[in-house]
Image 1 (cartoon, rainbow, N blue to C red):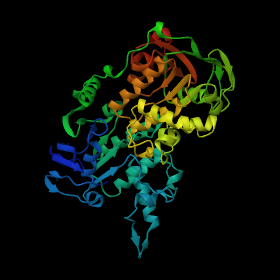
Image 2 (tube, rainbow, N blue to C red):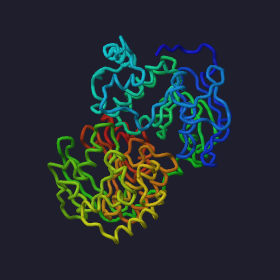
Image 3 (cartoon, rainbow, N blue to C red):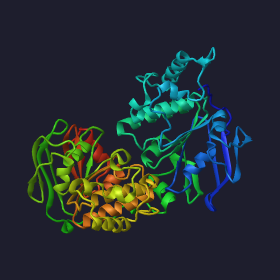
Image 4 (cartoon, one colour):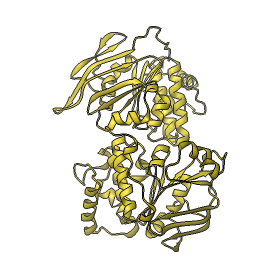
Length: 505
């Protein structure tokens, strides 16, 4: 990582007029992009806007049909990733490219192992790996550990160390936080900032606008393969950025909230519920209502979701659905009680990626009620069509769908059991802004049909925009309740445990 900041105000990389076509379809048209040393440049836009294609052209995965790429003012042309890496340009893909059964050191130096006397010099390889990790400010990862034993966040660290081992000057990162828990995201933030301190230019692709503003110095927006704007991030608001991306204001993304007269009787009631992570949870959700759960990481939001979903049951208290007591000792018991739980880990727990769209949508119904109902197979096709799932056919493997369409399949899987209560944890994680609106409309439509919805989201604007009420958790308890449309400050004051509900409002 022997990189210094450029003294002149000239970009390391200058891309001009980049155009790319696939099978006659233009996915990029005349796009310009500049990357400066020590700067995070966020690249944003809806799915299909051309972000990943532009990133892959920079990294040598694709070759532009028109336009030019300059490195330090000199034209370059890469026909393979190895050529780009030799020039100091690397990419960290959303789907990490690591070998699980090899060690951290073996992955970091894969293909460029140090050699001594004709053999791989393992001692040097391991010491160099430790040096790279220390330079990133990371401790606690042994170079001899097998990668499959690492957390997702630690694997991200290994990917970054791998890039740094080749003296990277430009690092492109594609949705690096999509699979990370909230407490792991801060680690990535620190790594990105440390890269900038070493003069590395970071091209950062993300759908999460909070982190775009938290990390980036400049933001470029693509739409339909064309450049919309490229500006310093300090000169943009979140609402302006959304308008540039999708042509609508941020507030316009959210469907109208329910009126009190439109709500039915209480569908879900928790009374004095708790377990080793939760205490004294009292919660009611009426038919047609969306109740948001807010709080810091570890406060108990997801613990409530898992308890109601039957995977980590309550050990004390009572649960009622439509006024009748239910025992939620397992996910199957929850489903049979009329409760659907959409996990935050879409790919790890929510989908069987190598199975078809139809089979994924039928997973819960088959598991809970058994059989391969021919009638329900036909019904699931109608459900997928009603939810506007974009797929080649219901037989297409779900791994080939976009993030937004994968999320719709996860929801379809649970809607197939016709739930009375729907618990959704991070329903739009890794989904672009346009697809988010489709999920919002779907959730509000379900509420209008009488489903009671409990929604968890780490994006406060989303939670506030969707919720009819917000319950804020702190240290395993409900710290307070806020009415529709609270400010982010009011939520955070409760979440940090510093004020009473009355003071927060």
